Amino acid sequence: MLQAFIGADVFDGTVLHRGAILVVQGGRVVCVQRQVPAGAAEVCLAGGTLSPGFLDLQVNGGGGVMVDGSTDAVALGRLCALHGRLGATGILPTLITDTPKATARVIAAGVQAARAGAPGFLGLHLEGPHLDPARKGAHDAGLIRPMTDADLDQLCQAARDLPALMVTLAPASVTLDQIAQLAQAGVIVSLGHSDATLEQTRAAIASGARCATHLFNAMSQMGNREPGMVGAVLTSQVAAGVIADGHHVAVEALQVALAVRPNGLFLVSDCMAAAGSDATEFTLGGRRILRKDGCLRLEDGTLAGADLTLPQAVRVMVRRVGLPLEAALRMVTTTPADLLNRPDLGRLAPGLSADLVHLGADLELAHVWRSDAD
Image (cartoon, rainbow, N blue to C red; front, side, top):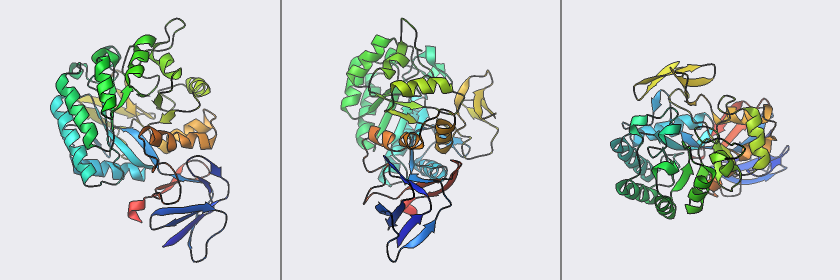
């Protein structure tokens, strides 16, 4: 069926087309134009903006469950479906620091989900266990450990078997040679949960790291004489995820980061089991996580992931940070797609899948269309 989406501005992944019409057929984009083609069924939208489906590269859970050692391919498919309804039509399910057994099981589940073609499954993100205990955040310090040769082999093989594999690590728990081997195998090496200095971070980047995990959070901060990991990331060309919930990073810090790096930053939800549910608390590794006032915290007050969706993060970037809408939308579409080396995602171009998100005039999520459900 030929469809014409009318009544909203259309963001194609790069440019915001005011008052344009998106033409779709069979779950694929035909074109963005100014007139309704003959014979097309009109999909009338009440203003707002139509965008490519959002991409979330840090999704720890949702619907009351976390990604953990019990996660199987079916659970990954359900998680992708849940977050698709929340606006993220493509995600990297994320396992935070866990046991070797849990890591192996989640990798196996991811490979099975990929082979089954689970809609919205883009690969996996392993956040740990090769981190720095000094910047553990809500991770279990007892499970953080240095990378072994066996770990390295496992990750390199996983990168070959998965559509994408992101691994968050700290220079304190790996060698530069291990970073280089991971990068050569196709792993997206992301730096985070680290107290590394400027020079240590730059050495890791030179060895192949090309991303940073939740910029500003759980990493060495910028000082006047030691710029730390924050300074190294902002003065490099590596990509960096940002949690824009108004709690993890001050608005002013986000404004500074965007002034220095107008390109390369992308939004992540870092959401936990509470996403898409009414839960007021859940457990993480036997510890209570409390949900209150838009935050998720351990009982000692430590932030433990975010109570956030990508549409909410876009709203924060536009309404509070002051970023133009098309720039904020690039942070959830083309920028993460480019990091994954997926030119087929995050864009509305002829022949590409028509995964669509409609934000109303108030920037609240209005509707999601999945190409696989057309």
